[in-house]
Length: 124
Image (tube, rainbow, N blue to C red; front, side, top):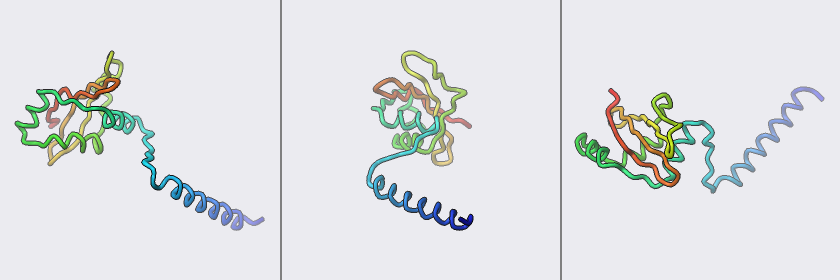
């Protein structure tokens, strides 16, 4: 069998497999959060979030809406160098993101059932 025929069979099977996956998984809320960053952010997003008074005061002083917390948890990055992933009982993560041309850092205390936003600060 020639290479072009084998390639044709492979590609047709591949396309049929992709179409089947799209059909079966299309309506479900499946995600592929394989990276360490994505897993941590998803973990924090799915928990009950508690915002400390210091963080609320920062948002009030900077005139930033607290809904940007969710935006940063979607589009931000975890700075593992400045995080304490060995802390007990709750791990501490620094999440960095950009909002309205301001770069913000958020310090989360990630516990079993809650994620507490301890502090917010300007990065630059």
